[in-house]
Length: 337
Ligand code: ACO
Image (tube, rainbow, N blue to C red; front, side, top):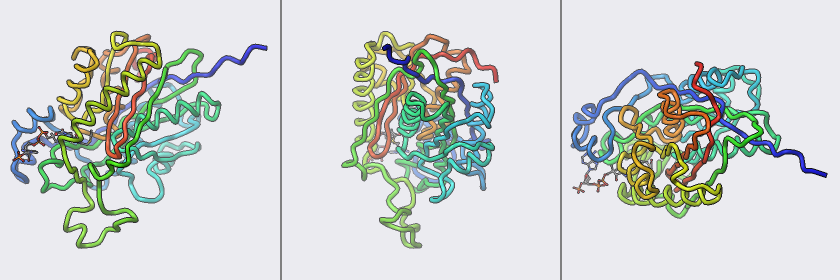
């Protein structure tokens, strides 16, 4: 007896949504001791988008999800699974995913994943596994953040780094693998390195804690985050390529998490992937955490940088620490929507 052919998953389309409000580096010059020159030189960021008052994570996630569905040619009623990766859900309860489910008129299971900036890697791995196992017919996977609500605008070491936005991808079943392999990692011993200390069950928000900025992003050491981001993304990419029997030479496009231009450059350099085969896309959007990879992916696809047959390597790193990578053979034609 021959085993039934294995079912695979592939990306059928992507989409992005960004808030309208553009916040240039000069905005921070009036708040903290910094300069446009320092921010551009040390991070590669010139501007970012901030959500409008009342604009929540699920609003951006829904818009990105709608565009990805249009690009994939999938109707909302056909969606079988919805996963939203976010560290900034609309509310602690219920999930951002159920808000998106209602907004898009879906009737499928829906849940959030919080793996910080690595969230899209985690969500994509879960969506892929569900399709491969037959647990879902397809999956809408979204990374979305409104980080401007959790910034400490008196801390120059963090407030200049982040932006708001959402990116989405539609996974569908395929005979040939689109998603070739995934890797996920975590190191909870470094939880304090990058954290929002209060607002959860350990340290509920109080007026004192709000005044002490404990409900906002706190980074113990930017240098240590930088070091770990470079070493961990590089090693997980190497391991994943080995697992798939490929080498960095086979990668047509590397899309690392867009935290800092120097991190992206170092990862590419260590892997031996030249800048022209690597995506640098934080200049206009900043670090959008879980949304960073799907935003960069969508913008690269729509700019004509990704073609059917291309090998695309997505690498993520974030608070937790969490990190991961996804190796994809691109199958979608040029975007139709
Ligand atoms: N403007 C001006 N000066 C600044 C600013 C700023 N916005 N931020 C920090 N500095 C100062 C520091 O206070 C320090 O001054 P000091 O020497 O008087 O103490 C000096 O610049 C050098 O600080 P470093 O931290 O060594 O600067 P570095 O070159 O490492 O750049 C940065 C800092 C941009 C945070 C970098 O380390 C980085 O990007 N790290 C990764 C962190 C990150 O991306 N975190 C986001 C979430 S995690 C993720 O997405 C991977």
